[in-house]
Length: 148
Image (cartoon, rainbow, N blue to C red; front, side, top):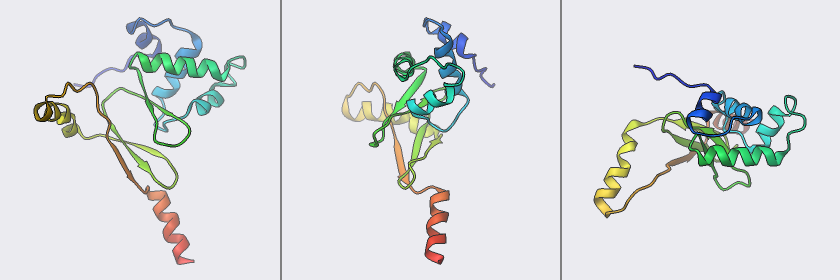
């Protein structure tokens, strides 16, 4: 049975968060993309709709949405965090050449919390799995460069 995705407004209300046009637009944008944008990406994307919105407003709303558990902040060592809407638990594969982040779904990894708790008596609160490699586009560019 498929789960119905709520609208940004409904998700905010369900989370007992104040619904503002900017917050709703930021959440809507994140729900509709798989590009894992930075705060600056979001700011530039929404700038024409909200010409008076500051970068600080975007950061504050991202902090709120992260705190509510509606989005996830992804920091992978570069200078900017990326943001991801969290509808279904998933992991990330990160290209070491271009930095693009890909969603990776593997339900079997959800057992890692239970296995860790049983093996260590640890009270697991969360986990994050990252896979690093070279994406298809970067592999193609490398092979084209070698062929020259």
